Image (tube, rainbow, N blue to C red):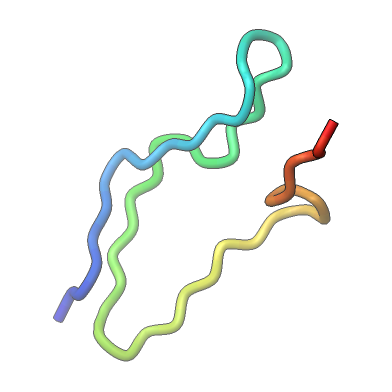
Length: 50
């Protein structure tokens, strides 16, 4: 049984040539009891305060 379903999920940080596409057109289904994690390179989830 699905408890979460997303389609076409995208997330972009910044604009223009500095844009970082963290997620691009992601489809995801999570079943009851499943454990899911999104992983990326070190620093991929943090934004610089500057």
